[in-house]
Length: 235
Image (cartoon, rainbow, N blue to C red; front, side):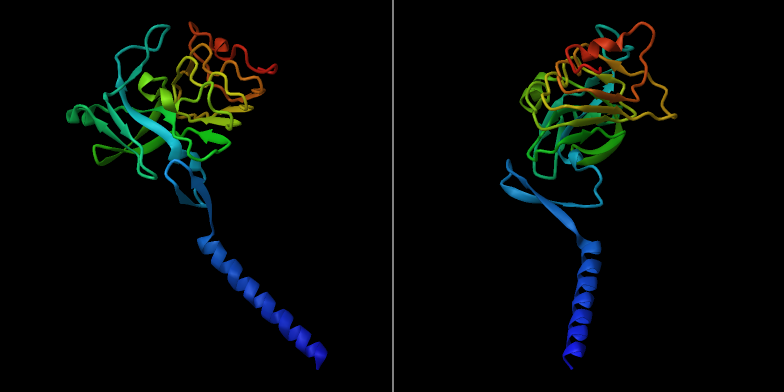
């Protein structure tokens, strides 16, 4: 009788664990504290890039120039960025400019959560004047209006940066002096043959940066090596 009771209990425990496992498979999520907003934000596990929630993307348009030492191919369209937990938006100074958006640029990092990596996507959807706009991410921009949200010389948490396949330019000193940055990976797409222009010191002064993979080439008149000035010994 005692042996049968033990077997029955074991079967019941196994059944409970199976039910719990099935439930977790459907609704499992993890929670991180958003200190700036004084609340907790739920990220489903199927969200493969939670860093998107903290990337400050601004709309850009083509300047008419090719990228060179003094010109960028894309400029920010005037407007203001609003930071609300889980609901970032950009308001254009001129509403008619919504038709002039060619893409987006990463201009800052609202790091309410100390993630150890940032993955810049190939494209993103951003709320512009109340309308969801999906466009490619074309540039990493250093902009004085977003100085309080910069990466360079400030962020000590990020260890890995992944640069999306549509990014064609990274501004000077955009990621300069990141003390913990170890790995830099550029996503290459056979569908995108655009050059990648890394301005001087864009990834410079990062003492732990020792791994760089898949960088796209620049044109023959541009030297990307200056981008890594003062970074790790393997660069």
